[in-house]
Image (tube, rainbow, N blue to C red):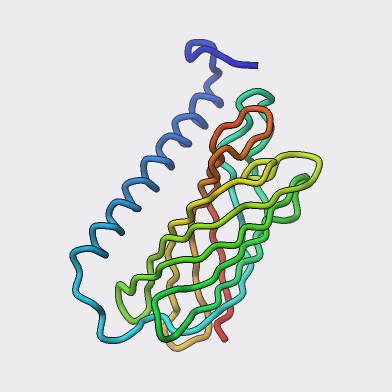
Length: 188
């Protein structure tokens, strides 16, 4: 069921505004990352060494345009395998513990901001299943994943955060799904 802008309730309006703000933030972040990558000199040392596995939470900011289903909270299991010679990582996230689930593998280009912090932009695919749409939709979709990894000094802990933008992710509505993830990982 579609609504005109004037018929939205206050809760729906704030979610719609939040979704637009998140999309604008992710887009501006991707532009800033792109500008930094094209204008920065190559780093002499690779920061944020190591791979990790972690746990966290996911928040879906969108829902199916036709059914209104989707969005909501989910748990996330995240992993990163970092290649040490090149600034590339293989990442995977499983969005679980909800009515819908998703598995999102990506390959990312990592850019070191300092010894403890990497920003990255990944591309991949989301695979979904379950009774309800997951935070990243209810059908297989191409995804972009901008994010950041912060290695806590003097520990093996990693704080991660990212967005998953899944294009054409809803079977009925066909619209883009956006989800935000954050959590803590253990570096190995």
